[in-house]
Length: 447
Image: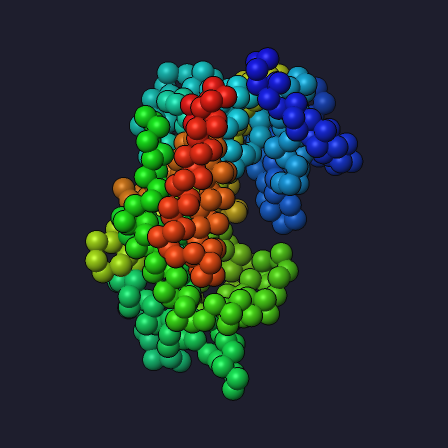
């Protein structure tokens, strides 16, 4: 690992400072000191941290060999802390990590291939029974480095009352993007000066929406890539056209006036500022907790009428990883199986429901516990439709994924602002990616 260590020494100072900051964090106190400790790091804070602790407690109460000890680490420094822990020989035994970071961590030798911890029966069950898009999202170069304990997808949240007041039937939702945009026009509200006071719907998120146009941002195993494509150009042009129609400055002022509190209860959909909005499935559970009185629907984003792909999108979320230098890999694997539902789907269903997370497999979805929760939260079904769709794709399994994501966001932002045309934005995106790829290959990396 000498080559990798040398590479990461360039961030050592920042990481060491981060470790000092983390030293003030307190893990949960030990209740079972006679057991083998399994150290678990995660990034959840506030109410989410409480839900995670319930799962940790359930595991500790389910057996008498291991004690999982949870530590919440702020997301801003978690990766640096993890890297220094691996290099220094003092990592956690298991950690929840954003799946987009997995290829880079695996490429540098920081992660354990999880199939090496599986029994033959477990390996067969995992590869055969998981949702394909979730399984593939935790893989890199043919090996399993991450297993989901809560994947994320996006769909449309629809305010029923506001739709009906505008003469729209929320139970007969648009089947094309064009019709949805017309709904948005009817739902927009303005003050006497022409400023937006309520936003009906605005198209955004090129990295997700492109799949609905039959595109997407793909980097193939042979090193070729599909970035500047006609389908992606159609998607970006549509985003730009819709923003021009609303007025870029008007949307900017409207967004600036929204509450920026991190608390779930301040989400602008809950406060009525957004009639139809694009967001993740965890909001279903938040709405149940904070706005049980709000009548709403959830639908997949409809595709464009011409050459569109229904139930399309890309998945992300929280995946469990085991560091290559972890001291208790066996205990870590037992905890991963417990939470993910690989060994007991019905028990694990309750864990996914705690956070409104998407499950590992149809076995979890179809379990009695999950189905009972689904009856109380039928809006969640839209996300399960997308999850099971062949048009739902994993993010590119490349070590420089963060660079690519930054370039996609930059292309969308510049095109929407009118700094460049959509065509120029995608041309620049592809040129920048090629330049970065060439630089990495010169250093000996595959991608």
